[in-house]
Image 1 (tube, rainbow, N blue to C red):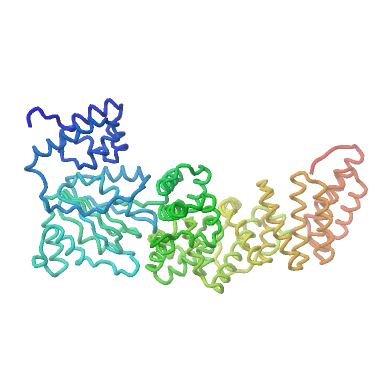
Image 2 (cartoon, rainbow, N blue to C red; image 1 turned 45 degrees about the vertical axis):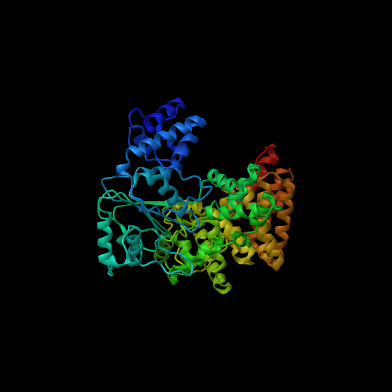
Length: 633
């Protein structure tokens, strides 16, 4: 049409007026930068009305400018009517999910894959509820204009409750019908259908979205054979068997995007930022959980965000709270769980009992009751199913909601046995590490627990220190688990064994919490030896943080408890430290008496460290009493 302005010319002028790059305009409009570039260079003007509206909004056009853009696009499309697609071109994409947010880097990466000279296959995997389908549909709509010959959508039902996965021959029959073939022209065999499908797509530009694939076998027959087409595949499993595939693994949302999603679904921008941050973390930043929680809040006018948070804080009922209508986090995880082999199901349930943030193969082996190599093999299946993560090589962790789901499924007898194996492993390996780092204090620590579980090799001090650094949070969590599960032997062992390491790291708050729990449980069980050890350890913590009077009280109580049950090691240590506390206060005769008593008792006990410290104490007493020298111990 002579004199008609191309819409690309208008877009370029308005973009430059807005001081935007093509990439910035694409980001604002939710289109690809390739589309903007092709439009401005005079490419096709057959823009969909929705794309025109997105561009007009992103550019801040007036009503008059919007009308000018729509008219230019219509005129250009009419001029190209000979190239317009027929009415029967398939447009099968589902509508984009309302409120979609985030995933900018992944969207940009898929945008860059569009290539007319090759068949592009992009697989999108991730855990249940992470938003794979929403992401794929969003991307497909962005890219649709690059594929004017149609967009196909096939739900393969790889993880649909009560629905069998779609057979490849059935999927091929469906897409052949969408491509205009009547039933009588569709052959019966899988190979013949696949060949006809490839023939129908030859020379065409079609986007194919295959949602919820169960395995590679469902997907391979649906991959075109000639360039120009693009295939997007979503699956809960990694699909390494697909050749020449660009793989994208989706994780939970960053906090900022999670907050935006929650706000969009609730349609309530007034919720305080600190409440938004907490609620999305309680949802584990999982898009499905966020949508469910937000929908529940929106549907209950009497609820506040604080009330919802109170309900979600109870980890025992959190999964139950994350249900709305037909949507449920538990139901989504059920489907992934049922697809596991029986040994992997058992491993999944037992690993969910781990109390710490992450674990290694030895910790996993202890829980499962197998070798570390066997544990890694089982974990491999869970990694492929996105039911566990590997944030660093050889370290594994759950998302919180997945952990809660896993742990809830294990019967109590098996749970108790697994926890015993884990606690035995923690105690034994902690003892081995501390024996390497502080061999002179070995006599102060209880002997290592016997266990059949393989322990990691700790050949030297460096290896011992590295293991303790990696596992300290887990060891503290295991100790508190022992307290919760009424396991005084394991708690006593970890409290006494870890004391020196926590002291070295100046983790006084952690040490105090650990020893107080050991003291409480020992007293509740009437175990005087454990009580004496915990009193001594808490006395050390009080002294190190400068509370001398409380330290003296704990040392005296430890001395009394030790003498009552014949715990010579604690008795001698309590005398040594009471002697030093007397020395600090200038009570030299009392201090001398305590150190002398240690030297009288110690030779028959084999407690050489106490003997040495008593001798040192006597030396200080003599020095300070004669020369009035201040000293710190």
